Amino acid sequence: MTEVMAKEKRQVAANSVFAAVAITGLKAVVGISTGSLGILSEALHSALDLVAAVITLVSVRVSDRPADEGHHYGHGKFENFSAFIETGLLALTCVWIVYEAVKRLVFRGVEVEPSIAAFVVMAFSIATDFWRSRALKRVAVKYDSQALEADALHFSTDIWSSCAVILGLALVWAGRAYHLPILRLADPIAALAVAGIVMTVTWRLGRETVDALVDAAPAGLHDRVVDSVVNVPGVLSVEAVRLRRAGNRTFADVRVALARTLSFERTESFSKEVADAVHGIVPHAEVTVRTVPRVSSDESLTDQVRTMTARHDVAVRDLSIMEVDGALDIEPFLEFDGALTLKEVHDRVTAIESEITAEMPRVRSVVTHVAPAGAIATDAEHIHDPQFEAALRAAAMVIDGVLDVHDFRLRRVGDQLDVSCHCLLADDTPLKVVHEKLVAAEQRVRSCDPRLGRIVLHPEPASEG
Image (cartoon, rainbow, N blue to C red; front, side):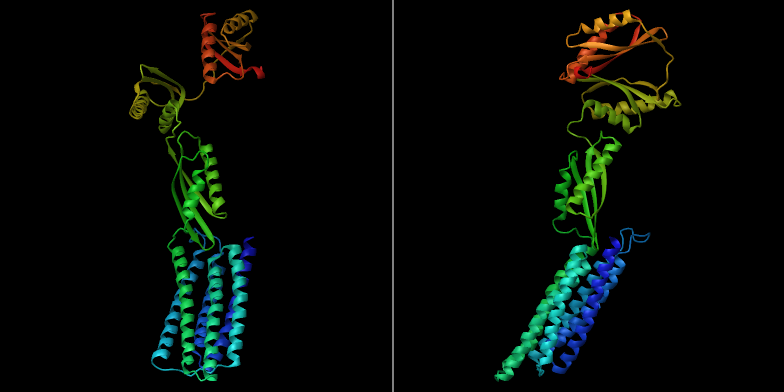
């Protein structure tokens, strides 16, 4: 696709150069032979069109080159720069035309000799400009090329300026035919009309090219991108959006706030969704998404504590948060590198506890348990005792809402017995109630034998039992 685009852009730009050569030559010959300032101004205008067309051809050849070590954003700015040069050439054209027209109107007149050749050349110029402006516009829209769009706009206004010159020549001819000397002024007035049209194009083109060269964001695009990104589920806010154009490419840098509790993988997924939202507004933009962690409104107490420990690269094995008389007592069970000394671990624990109490005003005390990181396999012996399992099952079934207890695993670990089993409850039981039922069932099971140590009751919905 890139090769096809580059070839088509180069072809239409080259055709424009060939047409400019022919039109410039014809206008110059006829303008000199007739003495028409209107046609001479058009010839000069077309000469600058030729220069602009050549610059455009060069720029589209260079701008399609891929990014390299010296041009990290590609070469698209060459298109904008060529349009800027064209703006300068147009401005010079306007100055010369206005100067000559005022001189002929105020100080000295120049006899204009309207001829059939003049009218034919201008008609040919209009037809050619119509053909190439449509061809340039089609490819410019297809590939979003500012250089080709500038040329298309330029040549479409040439049609109107040529019409103004034809009108001026026609009025000069009518003045001679009907002995109306005042109509000899029609030619320099037509030249001023040409200058006005050229100045209008110059202003518009200059504003667009300067905006592109100074990285001004396209009007209204910033707000549309923000509105699209902020509606991505999970995005807390859009903190910054930066847009810039280089030729037919748009670059978007977006910074969004996400919940600080998200995992790295989930954050990456959000980044892709944000990029997709930008592409919904600017289809072919190159999007860079930066995410920043922020506190979300639905962050739980557990999330807050885990986030603060994660800052210190410390894993939480277990966490207990108790509310007593409106205050919070927190007991985190943290894992540290087993090679650390007690002093090193204590210093890090003290820093974590200080952050918890500083950021959570309701916290009254923090008592931290520590252990070496990594799971350590424990020697155990599997036990099969149907009668003991039946007793444990009966104890758990006493709890209202526990529908069944099955799939027991009994293991002897040193002097104690560890037990795990599956506990069946109704499918629609709220998780909070499930937790309460399991705690009560664990207490009942533990009362069966003082040797019982670790007890794990795995909840299952009745439909899965």
